Length: 258
Image (cartoon, rainbow, N blue to C red; front, side):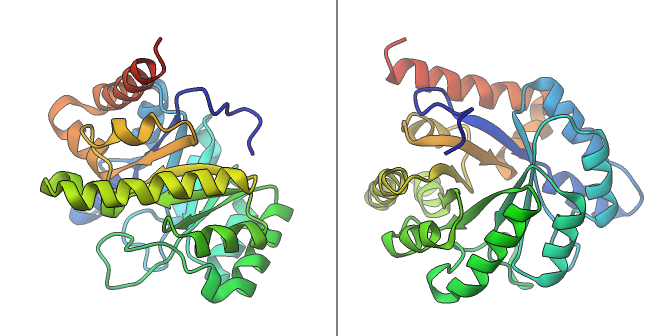
């Protein structure tokens, strides 16, 4: 477990800047600049900058990664597939954090968690290699006992539980599905902590669906992208980061009686 993160503290906020790069790439050129967005997010209070260098380079590009490493003072969380090319890049760039995720060319966004149990040897090898490069490794997985236990055996110190199904049910107003997915997340977080893992969460969370996850004492980090960048369209990036941080802090303070 990361000694800098107390389970009693509010979760750290990782801001995913992929969608800024998506907007840039839709028109070509260099605007809006995802690296400038990362700088502004840090200035506004983001604790971590998250980005996903996909194999097809659909949003973040190699040059973005180099610039992020050169100028961003906050920890970088490099999301990556298990592809050998990506592992080579990570070991050259040496970000502070890496989150291994599944990746399919056809998907619009990451669908589901990494199948650690089904490709255990590959994941274990990647965890060992990335740890040797000085990176803290996290595995983006479903809140499944099988996947959580496999992650612990693979040597990853952290897991990030996929909150997409919960967030989708929340947004759809499906209370039964929302409660079912919430219960899975709670059980997964508790299991992960019992196995000595740092437990993080993310995917699909909005200002409205974030509080219930943020108050769970086992959550050390929340990684949020689409909703935060979407909110920024209306209020600006600085205010959007501040709104998410304030929402997290307020929910935690209320839940813990402060």
